[in-house]
Image (cartoon, rainbow, N blue to C red; front, side, top):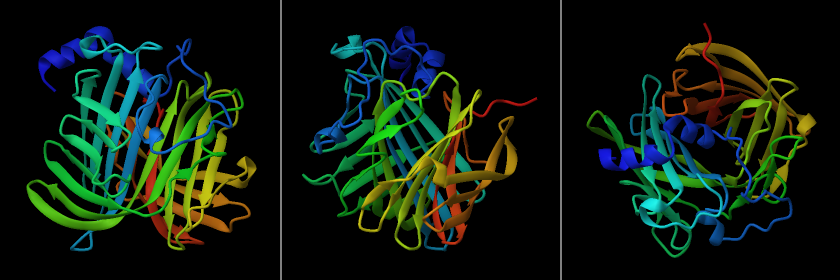
Length: 353
């Protein structure tokens, strides 16, 4: 991003405020539409942007293996935030802001990068059909009139990747028909996923290309407020099980009450079932000190009624994204009642003395 664009962006939305909003913790929701149960999710329309809602994201995580058998992970994320409700301003007057995050994680290294953009000038955006999401030269775009196949690419100071994602599976509706509740106080998002991508392509680290294959998971969420006032952050898991099933689980931590649990069990044929909150258990088993924070990087997860009782462990415990709002994001391995791989995201862990 050049200095002129960055200066214009920060002049209207100072970075701390912008980051707070992207993290889902903002408090100003007047004028933005509420997320309501029973709202129909429609494709291809809902692949694109929802500028009337305050915040949304396009989120891809990929568990990969290179030709030498080494495991690695890739994250690509595009965030959009509206700084004012009902904004349809064009050009530099736009009140839409965009932020991109990307990371590549191996057992020994974690590399990340960030991009920021003002809306309305073509530097970043998302379109529904044909699908495209981009910020600068980072892109997630369809190569056909259908949503898939797609090409995913990004660059950082010492890494880049160019990946092809293919699937013929339908989109998955998380929560109840795409309505994903986040608290008992009414916070919720519209939430859809595509967890069935097969991946091929190239990841380049320090100038050395590696041919990779693997699996990827895409999440889409849009909302006007994600967290209740007492909620401080979340722990989110996506699991590719060896049986072919996919599992999404999260807990939202609170300063005043027990965590709020939610998740969906996704059969190999794409059938998605919301899991009862009381059936989900998450127990941190081991922590590491990362960026001055004590972060759990090994967990015991279980789902009653699904015979799932697994240990998940970070491929690289130091998978910290030191971006405008910092968080932990990295690939995990799954062992126990089922084997598998997946991704873990953790936000809201405070700096400890």
